[in-house]
Length: 224
Image 1 (cartoon, one colour):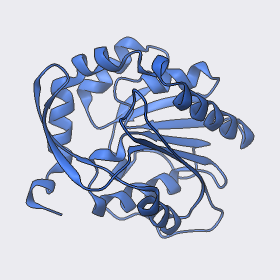
Image 2 (image 1 turned 180 degrees about the vertical axis):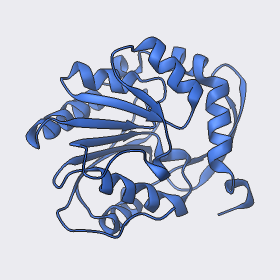
Image 3 (image 1 turned 120 degrees about the vertical axis):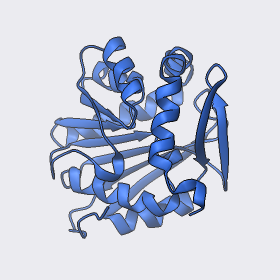
Image 4 (image 1 turned 45 degrees about the vertical axis):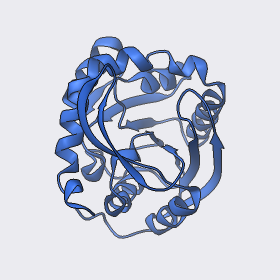
């Protein structure tokens, strides 16, 4: 981890607080342009119903657009995001779901309380060393057999994003990953990987969607 990554939680929070309103405006209708992503979200919703149809966490929910989409599919989804600014926008735009501030590396969700968890392009700012911590929290929060859906940018390497969404200043590292990198992390955290899909769409120039499920085996409790 580089020195720039040491305070990644703070810089990510500040960056998305800064761009929250403009970000929401720019991505509001993005799912309308991404039929393959909608199909995967529908499959995820089916898997949630298959294990009981209980609560689903959209971790890194941003302005809540995917949380709301899942609720439109009949899923009891709620959103968690690191940025208070994003949560304010999510509550404004989608008054139905519950939204709360929280970090995926210290997930404020009770053990075994979820029938599904989604991290939709939200692991992209998490340094490699912290991804296993987040995945162990996801495992802890999910019931055995419950699905996990990850969306991410496919590739290698990291770039520093210094502005975006209307030209506002940002300071976030964007990490690209591959299915070959994610699968061992998922296995170590206690997940069984079911499928990977790569695609080009309005969501990402080259996006990855990985569907996994929480295995029944017990893994060590997450450490901060």
